[in-house]
Length: 333
Image (cartoon, rainbow, N blue to C red; front, side, top):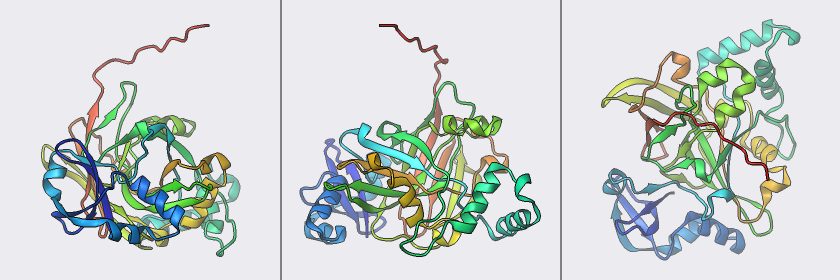
């Protein structure tokens, strides 16, 4: 089952189940997936059951909603400052060829000669998938922003004036709501574009934190339940309506060095991340980047990310900020 959030032509919010590529089945009396998830947590009933109970007679045409730019992120919060966006990297094996090369590199190098990134990758290989109920090694983690950095599907991803570059990262996104008692409630999964500044990161890996403070997008559809263990999607860049670049990307636990359970534990083990009522969107990483293939993105390029089982592709245009960077002055009180 997959859900979308959107606005009507009058501007009202709606939640709908995806019935087909062109038809949405609208839920009665439901404006947010957030409210559904909290109700599921309070009642102890599956989210799918609540959805089925609220299905009414109304249908909506999916195509015009997407074309008009009325799609919303698949999970958001009424207060965007209470939505935490975070991510994990160095946790994907990549293609079989890249995987073999990585293993050969790790097996022939001494520990002291490995870069910090390769050490982190090896740690994931060795201890990222512990036995059920056990705690594995912690993965890399980064803060991406809050709900103000979240761009709806179909809307532009904008580079700030000080950005050196902006390009896509096709990823799986875990979508969570914290229950009234602090329980972590997973609403589902979506496709995501963890848009980043790779030129800045390449200058020095200690700039990674800065490079991640960019907008991002996910959706448009929320896949309820568990995701497939093997997901093979496609990441594309369109320029002037023509395909500039495309590549498959692999994700899902079968293609990762860490289990989802281990990544989730090491994020939510921090008590402030279990504040009742908060929303978390966590990007699970990728091994496929157009930047790594030598592609230089330009304003007007369109990023498109798709995968079987996740419905309509996630599409966002790249835009820049025409204004020059302004010095931020601090006032002494």
